[in-house]
Image (cartoon, rainbow, N blue to C red):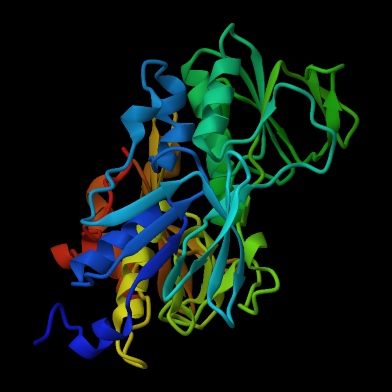
Length: 423
């Protein structure tokens, strides 16, 4: 008998599955396993003390809506017969014995857990600046981070946001929506220019200025001022940006410290094969996974919600597939960002050197589509306030075709049936 395309032999070989990482990718992997007929035990370990939640909401509606509490952004964890163990951190892995070392985050009790199948979905942690950090300086990665930052925004403080990537730009927008005085500090030439290019960066700089956010571009951070409590951000050009609260959004690093010495390949993430396999009966998914993109084989790591869900579902399929029969991960994923009155949707993965061209609308009117091309093929598309064109450009990026007159099928556009998506 066949169930979901998997042989009985393949399912019988895998007795139980352990998932390390209790956020979106971890839960999605558990859902994917059950959906494909795996009926053995599944245990999900997560190092945060509460159930998984919608991480993208932390820089958006969780900040701007004080009436929204943690319970309002929880993810459903309704995959059948899955054991969830929050507040448990993985501290090591012995491949020879397949023993996972664990520590309770409250109390520090250590224990071991033997793994058969393993899904690595530990995500990433916020990068911090290599300077002394006084009170009032925050990062934004976890629910606890967001709650502390939101509490500090009471009383109309002056806010400085360090880093004008996606998170920093969204936080600046959210703080302006709260009526706060905001300065956005970026070492590069323009907001998100590294990811989206200089042309888009210039338009995003104008977007921030049009909404009253001050920009300090081309200057790094040398440190902070204040005795115990932050009073300003000291820049490398000698200027000080006054601030009562600071949010540092300078990226994230994959959470792979617990795997050092395990023998698994680590290089800015857990290095996977095209099918997300890392070793025998071990796969990785989400922010922690680095895999060869199906176009050109460049190793990439993507820190986006949609990618985490789709990749976790694909990793579950790989874990259950007969040896050598797993399919490569080729999904065209997307990312969205709400900034002021703009909804940005990025489909695909633009790389440095890609040619960016406005193919629809006008960026100055904040309604347009920008296509990224490499060697004549479309590799990514950025949509500004053009959600009705999302399906067409997802299809265009998936096929590499420059024409966008035909829309994709529902199957190509629909995400896997995994935990509920963020707003």
